Length: 334
Ligand code: CP
Ligand code: NVA
Image (cartoon, rainbow, N blue to C red; front, top):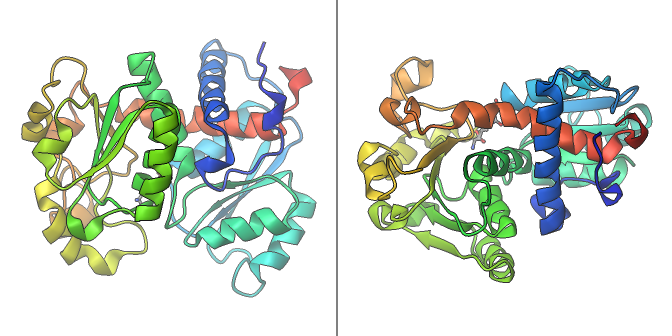
């Protein structure tokens, strides 16, 4: 029997701050329960007759397909509205499209550029709105990351997660918030040119303090990773920033996650976990990595036994399902 906190009904996820620390971890626990339900072969009706709009301005493999499978598994329907297939945001304002789609759908997941688009959708659609990645944040990713850490470590409070790479991108911002809310010690390791917004760091530090953990920013990789339980990285050039490729490679090459950096944690071979939101550049098998040679992680780390990236990718689906079910699911169908 699946159950969840009724206070989670009809809630937006614009950033992780839309949920209390406890509610965020309740979503992770619900995802773990939903994974067990699926592994046991149950396809239920928790989302029966629920219609979910997926508005995507940027590309996606994991988020898009996680939404489709999560909805289908529980009898719902997720409709992909990509690029210029609708009038959204070009021939029709976000505000007007929000009011139309809110009349038709039970909720909306948005992936795109501006955080303000998520805010406007939430303001005008009248239905729960979830952020599936903007230039500033990627909250659904972090639910999957916390789930993966929980699967590996059990209790995650007091563990140390070190993010190494572009310190001011969407994943780094949300990971910092998520770790602080989960009581995980967080270090953002990045060059001085790519430091996170000080206001976001200050907010995360306040949250971490009430959870007995810390948030640090460090420019030296060897210092940052000492004692890390998990190393996390992301691409050096996020979607929409392609014109910055040469500069990012120059800045971030010393921040590549390789075996030497893993050894510097002191935990290689004794529980160290490698995480990456994906897609990743770890070999020359993609057009971009072949062209630029920009590899944020070496292949031996990416393919190692301590790499948890495939669990992490699968967990995108379970955590997105938890979000759908808790916001618009039918508790009687549990
Ligand atoms: N991690 C992630 O959001 O992947 P996609 O871009 O494939 O959705
Ligand atoms: N920072 C990356 C994350 C992709 C899931 C991007 O925005 O492209």
